[in-house]
Length: 131
Figure 1 (cartoon, rainbow, N blue to C red):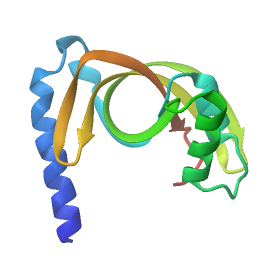
Figure 2: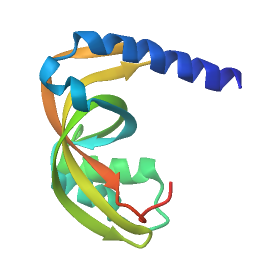
Figure 3: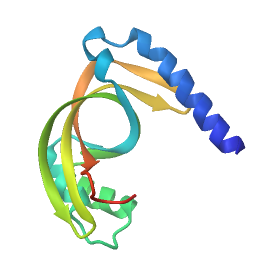
Figure 4: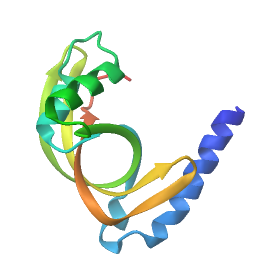
């Protein structure tokens, strides 16, 4: 419970920082702990691995193939842009969303990006993958 209270407090602190984020994205700002990649193909590679592969192993595999920092796992503040594709996995359909990353949650702090960046993240399709 203490851990959950801390996480909620950290989230609320992060949300308080939304007031300084760009106004054009403020109505569609989301936050999530996810894998984020430089391209939709890298996300497809990440989620399309063996069904018993651990997330860390998948991340290492993708980064060996596409470059050291092609994908990372972070808590992001982002604005969704468009769907960029999908991939069928043994567990269900995973859609790939193009997002504009506005900030990164680092511990209990929101680190606003001076210049938003485009990344691609997996999104669980309705009725799809259970996490």
